[in-house]
Length: 77
Image (cartoon, rainbow, N blue to C red; front, side, top):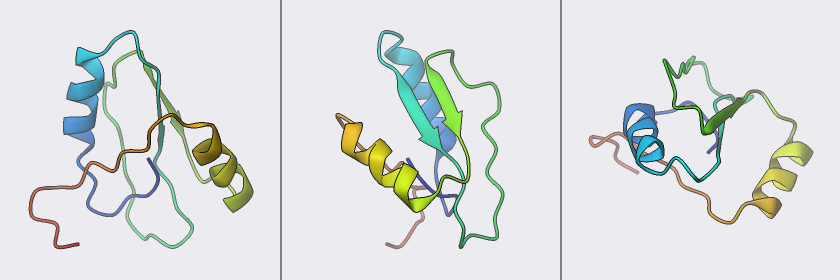
């Protein structure tokens, strides 16, 4: 996961808590967003990364088995 805009990190943390044997990597920073995301009290299977370079982000995507973007319910994308 990458970015800060309209992400539903509460739902993501709840889902990760139900899947304790899976590792989650959450990227909560981006160069173009003015918002500041915070994950409060994430489950132990979530590792948090911030402000990756584009090359590092591409590498993370390349190694991922799945990429999910948990959007807030009212998001109009």
